[in-house]
Length: 471
Image 1 (tube, helix red, strand yellow):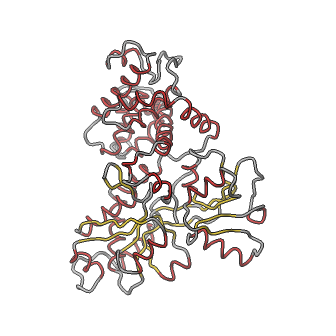
Image 2: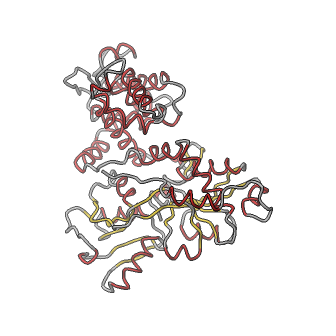
Image 3: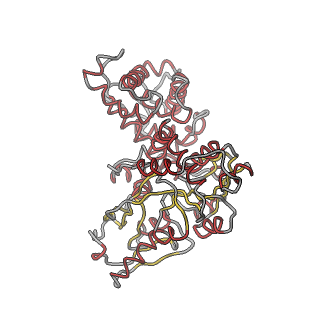
């Protein structure tokens, strides 16, 4: 299973803090003092579904959320300056238009000669990608074709160094492209190979199941924020202090779960089946999902329905749950459904039930995580979900953090733990997988059905955006 090692380098961080620290009474000449006097932190980024994007005119993204917290730490407002290419991004910093860059950047040797890098946010492993059905190389020497990568990327720099010792290595840096387009080219047979991060491949295989990992490079690489070179440690010290606090208060763990927690082993057969059904079955039911989603995203309701029934109206399990949303008889009565096999009634009832579960959860659960708790309750019942929160609390963990409750769900199988609960034994591991699967299907549907309001961009601009990879 793919695991995301996020926010590493604690020892280095603490050592640097001991040397620098975050001093609010600094001379006016420091970079931090200038930012605070200006009252604004300017951050360069890329339009990107991981780093920064707009949804319903609201800013979102991992780097956006972290940058907003950093601006709050400094006591200033945040201004994100998004662009579309690496060349534009580094030009922002070179010309003094931003104070720092936050866009999934890897600290290569060449870049470190010209820029300063903050603490590691997470680590990625560079992975060579090939097309299924072709010969799978085990190392660079076995390649039978050309590796295409983004011009100016960390992958291009690495390949340039490798070619010094392997003159026969064939690779091509491309402008006006992005990592997802390169993966698409491999999937369609228009490129032999590409080199991307393991996290990007894990997510993109949901759209292009015909691609796979040939091998990963042995050393993972840290992703960091970037600053210009100067004899002034004030901004870096403030950054280190900020990340130390975010780690201690659990914010970093929450963001890790939000953006990477649902990445799991890729299932080729399941993904191919899903994509075929999304093309052949979903269009006829999409109006019903849109009509009855209420305040929820229709794509989320459709993902739940696929997990439950594969969009088959007459689906039935051995436990007696039935229909597209697999409602029990009791639940159907609660939400006013008298025919569970009627697609519209089932979708309306399932969406209503999920919405009610979200409303019934404790108010202490953060808004952005309530839906994952509710989905677990949809699968095993609200009582058992609350029992999992109780176990989490008994283990000295945070019952309001989905990442921690998720890991404790399997303990509902174990007598030593479920004896301490109100509702007893439950298939907690199944609920854990249930939620992860839905998050994967939901991500795929967000990619397949991109509303133009997601980024205030045209469809053509959406296609040209960089995708989820460290660059």
